[in-house]
Amino acid sequence: MQLSSKSHTRGNIRRNFIVLAALFVLINSGFSLSAKSLSAEDLPAPLDKMVLEDGDTIVLLGDSITHQCLYTQYFENYIYTRFPNKRIRIHNAGVGGAKAWDALQRFEKDVAAYKPKYVPILLGMNDGRYTPFNQEYFETYQQDMAKVIDKIKAIGATPILMTPTMFDARARRMNPRGNPDEASISQYNAVMAYYGAWVREVAVHSGYGYVDMYGPLNQLTVNQRKQNPKFTMIKDAVHPNEPGQVVMAFAMVNDLGLPRGLSSIRIQNRQGKGIQAKATGGKVTDLKETEDGLEFNWLADSLPWVLPANADLGVSLTKLGHKLTREALEIHDLKPGYYRLAIDDQEIGIFHSTVLERHIELQGNKQTPQYQQAAKVAELNAVRNNGPVRKLRGEWSRFQGYARTLAAKPEEDPAALEAWEKKIAAYKKQIDTMDQRVEQANAEARKIEDEIFKINQPVCRKFSLKRVPAPKRKGAVKKKAAQAK
Image (cartoon, rainbow, N blue to C red; front, side):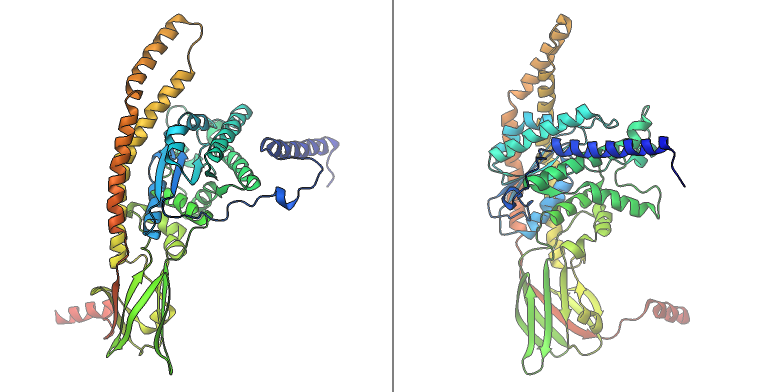
């Protein structure tokens, strides 16, 4: 089949446009397109992993999705339970509606003042202004993000660029509000993809940290819609719900190279050497065989990553437990049969010897004392976020309104200027005493954090395995009961 000359011309124009667009992105990303080859010294590697030490601070800078205090809270739960012996502070610096410009206005007091080692940035959802791609808006985003990055580097911190999250066009259509613009709805997720591609290129080219928030949310949504076309993790199209925010927290831990598996215990009775334990993530002591099983003490280095029940779907979709907080127990050379596992005399379950030999995973078992301990950490951290952290973010929301109003001073209209002056005066009454309220909220948050670090310390647990009769099958029990009647 031959193409007409007109079709061929259109194809060339289309290809040329794609090439020019790609070049434009590279140029505006700060890349040099000179003919000179780059040496190895000119190519910094992006951040391989986040290295955390006692006393480090992480500031999470963002918009309303950060202000929601969900993915940030789940990430904190991970830090509190995975590094119980390191006092690592996390400051939420998210404000609803924020663009990169807004982050610049509060940078000194809401970011720099906390002396962070790392600053993950989640901005862009509002910068595109919920319209089809607009070159002017994108250039403004690029310029303001570049300034944010420069400020982070100037205080000696490492920027971590996170792609804007998914805009769920289908969810927006399922929940129409007002008079939605179909072009904006159908194209805005692509706009976020474009912004995210630029973020990735800047991070990789400059050697910063990088987290893909966009890809996992989109891919999991597509996968789930194969079974349920109405599935969404972003009901209002913009703000991920609890499961969606688990996906985001998962992406941070995964992409920033933080420790994955929690612990592993392998027990084996080797001929001539007796019963022995090999473990990672903790220490086994007092291991001994008993008449009908074995027992040992276990002091873990950390606790499982536990999230609230309303986030369970996100845990399941990401396989978070197995991938990022795996707590494995593997026992060989037992006499064939069933064994009752107890931890601190709390029954955890009954398992066949062949299952124990393959290994069982305990991280999601709500009966274990370590799970219950980690759940208390999560509950207390929810109190911290729903109380003083939200109070703190409310203060910065008011400041954002003040900063935007201050920048929008009318120049010529006397009536508009008078109204502006009244509005600024009202804002100033709030802003003048803001520092004291910010410090009070921070103090309240630190007080709760002190309590978290009292209950997040791993405790030595006694494990025991005892051989028991085979459990009765449910069907057999029902049949016996029917016969008795």
